[in-house]
Amino acid sequence: MKKTFTKFVCLAVALFSFGTLQAQDGATEDNEIFKLGVEARFDYLNQAVAGHVDAPSSGFKVRYFNLRMDGQITSQFSYSWRQRFNRFNSLSDFAENTDWLTLTYKPTKNWAISAGKQVVMIGGWEYDRAPMDLYFCSEYWNNVACYQLGASVSYTTNDNNDTILFQVCQSPYQKSGANLVPDVNGNMVVKNNLLAYNLYWITSSDWYTGLHSMNLMEYQRNKFDFYIVLGNQFKFGNAKIQLDVMDRATSFESLDNFSIMGEFSYLFADRVNVFAKVTYDQTTDDYAPGLYFAPDMHITRVGGGVEYYPLGGKGNRDVRLHAAYAYNFGDNPYGVLVDKGSYLTVGLTWRIDIMSAAKKIINKVANK
Figure (cartoon, rainbow, N blue to C red):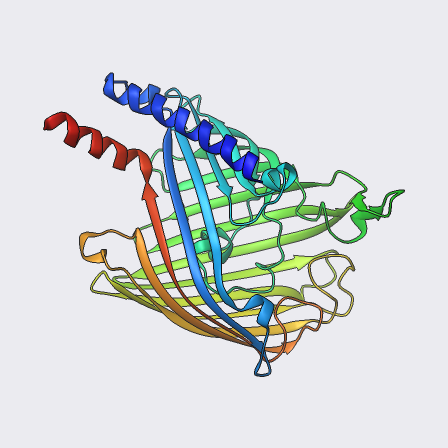
């Protein structure tokens, strides 16, 4: 782990130096190929079931420690990379903790083609938001394998209000359920390469933004879980409502396997954001085995919290303090969310744009 991290730091320093020299030489926008940012979140957690604290999952935790790189190679080619560093012990773990690493080609203003490790394009706002900006989530969110290898093509209208995207990628069920079998040494390995086909629509106006999708995902060879997801966000001044409805069906005879996620938030004086949230996940007794949920499951999570932005008065969201609490009730003995489970988090989040900070330092030195 130490050797891997050392190599990575050396690479980052080298790229950083190259990017800085480009900036000093007056590089055009096409040649500014290196934008670097670091983000981290630290929490104190208290997780309990029926009042009994779960010691291993409680205490002080580094929840997220991410590095993100983006670049505009030319006016038509760009890339994006996000890597998690708070948990890995080997090179294979390093690759597994690459959230995305994509190259995008835009032949025109309207069309874009991307390939690499990508976010699986499933609708909904809880799913879409960055993990470090969420404090407690639905049973579905806690199980979905949302980063997979694939390719996509998208079309954006001239007014930028609508984007239609089609994606083919590895199925999120690639490493779950019946698609894992033991090898000769008893290790569980992937049996088949499963695919997902995702049609995604982003639509926006002054007060409404929708993140909708239709998803066809293999969970066994030639067997599919079909999603219809409607993600809705309504904004009224400083108030915001997000409401997601997700229906899942392995056959079209039943529409009783679904999730609902709703959140209301209000921002006071650009510094204090308060929110309340509820999620509900359900499956019937005929839900296909080997997917994210056990059959005949229903679990509700309710809670709320507060965020404080010390620099919010300047429109800055790079430093954040938070406190949030959630409670679960229902029947889900084999899931992440269990009956009478409680979750408390208090913590700190910060983000740094390293390249912008470096340019400011260089400018100050140059002007002295």
